Image 1 (cartoon, helix red, strand yellow):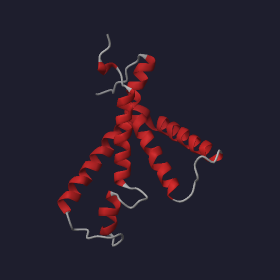
Image 2 (image 1 turned 135 degrees about the horizontal axis):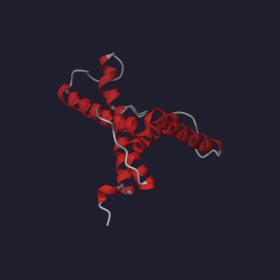
Image 3 (image 1 turned 135 degrees about the vertical axis):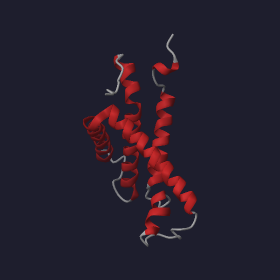
Length: 147
């Protein structure tokens, strides 16, 4: 009998996708409700609000976002590599092209930004999940060489 650590479930992939979406949209989004709009842009005199207000909260949330990006990007780099990441991005681009050509998705206004953000979340999710999926598909285990 296989243990739960032998692979990944659809729920596990879904949770990784939800967290990737939260990370991407919390960092920046076209609705102007993001860390970038709340903290970064006011530092340069753009956007609204006082850059120094709630500084400890902004600092902690910024560190949490950096940690999230480091975890996701490092897992993606290790599991997919540059070539794999480019292939996943190409698949996302091809799907967007297909949906656009059938007029299911309109490439105008904020829709483009949302499509890009969801594509980045898909890339991060696949990168975070790839070692588990690969093991389930091939039976081979990915390891890092430590010297």
